[in-house]
Image (tube, rainbow, N blue to C red; front, side, top):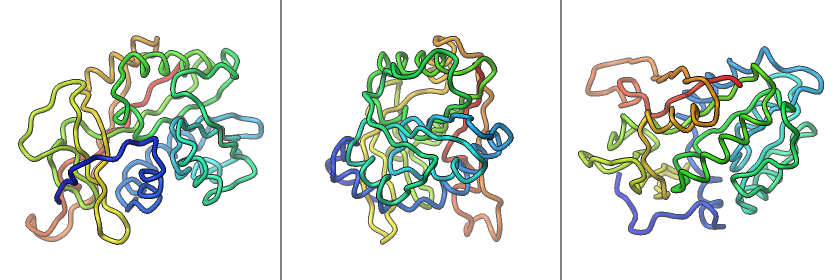
Length: 246
């Protein structure tokens, strides 16, 4: 995998178009099952789930199909939302533009679940993420789950089948920019702008907002064949799933 010279910022039409064509196999195999398994039992008529930083709507569509969740899918990129509305319309999904920080149209204790997938790594601003995390805590009903899925900070530089987060052998500290390569469906690569955060930093963002310390899942794929033939995602988790509750 070879990085491009200029990583794409997420809030651009070029990033949205490229992200629409990304190879989602690993996310579909490693993130979606864990997230959906934890939320499937909570769905029901009138139950509201938030997909925060929904991008092109892949997770929101999954949520709408596992039960009777009403889904509010939120993103700061109008271009991403335009693709989501076109590619993944659903009568129980409402796509909404927001500023990445405030959920001021939602009342306290009014939401039954929240999901945030591959979002924190794209934001360089800890203060903004702290504000968003506090808002998520505010709107969730007592006991409601919050699932935060993101790139595994312990896997920087590892070349997985569809992505590489950081340069091989590079050492990153909290807040450092990290070039992340994403494979597209045609086999080409896009380089996106992401930022490193340690697991401790993720924990502190959650506990600082009033959440209990999360459980951490590091999903990998089953191994098959010889060690030389098996992809890196059978040995190392590309992603992590953090689960906590209001």
